[in-house]
Length: 393
Image (cartoon, rainbow, N blue to C red; front, side, top):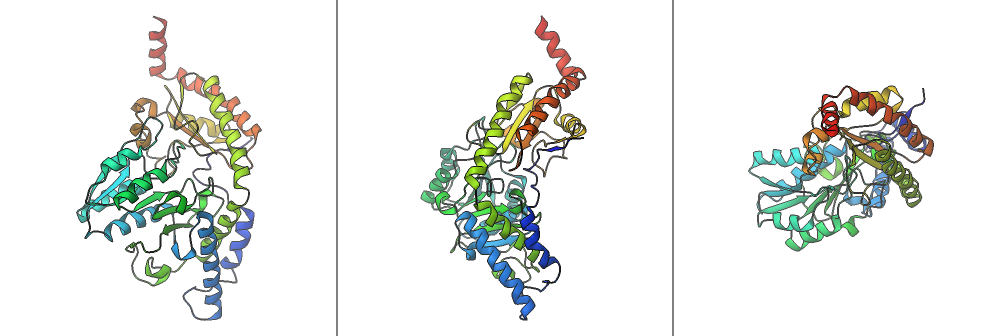
């Protein structure tokens, strides 16, 4: 059976050159970077080289890059570490309503330490209004966190404007840029952020490889205590192979990015234009233009997302319904609900995400198999039956 994988927002394949770079550090180059002997120093040098490559990808210096085991850890590190480091200045954080659960849960967790948080709303496209951020900031606010791009609906936020508002108010700003880095140009100075999270599995690096950018001079408390690794900010023996893989993936991502964005954008737009024409009652979610180039997302009325995913899989198509961290929860997406999508429609969400190497034939295949799936599932839907009865009156 033909397989078409369109769930790359959950994870991309590891690029062969990344695997090649990692292999020696899974075999003969096994030294601990904290050891003073030659084997340890060899591992340390490889990590520092990778740190410089990751920094270059986002316009940061190597000293501002701290490696983590996942994007979620990087977000936790940023929210808790930055807020707690400023506890004497205030106890309030601001986050958007469409943040990843690792940000939202971290903000809630800070309540245990006496913090409060404000959720900034979004419009029907998932966009945050910088003026809403400005209104949410109080004299007690010590941190604002707004993502750069949303993995569920693809919307790219006006982050530079948001950061400008925060800078005028003297409040540090963090961004979850995990869905964006490696897929669109990202520069920390152009954005004006103080902290940024990224993850290698979004741009052909290994899973379990991620990093947090913290601007020089920005105070942050460790999330993991107990060692001197990462400048004393994250204890634990380093995942050298994963770090090397992340560095190589970052190096590769820089080359040819504009061309990849054009190719992906053309396939995305073809899917966005064609799917609603082929299937009635399909809503594009996220902003039509201000979105990730490889991302197309929809809600299909009268059908549940889980049923569509399983049916697509049986036809050889892999897709997703919401965030990879919540897709098994079988709950309506908090992102869609925040955008004003009603609960019933939000249950029918679908996300298709492509990589460099995806073809028009892949999109054609999806467009061929998807309409019959929806037709079959709607025949079993009491909501659709009732809708059709009402429409005939």
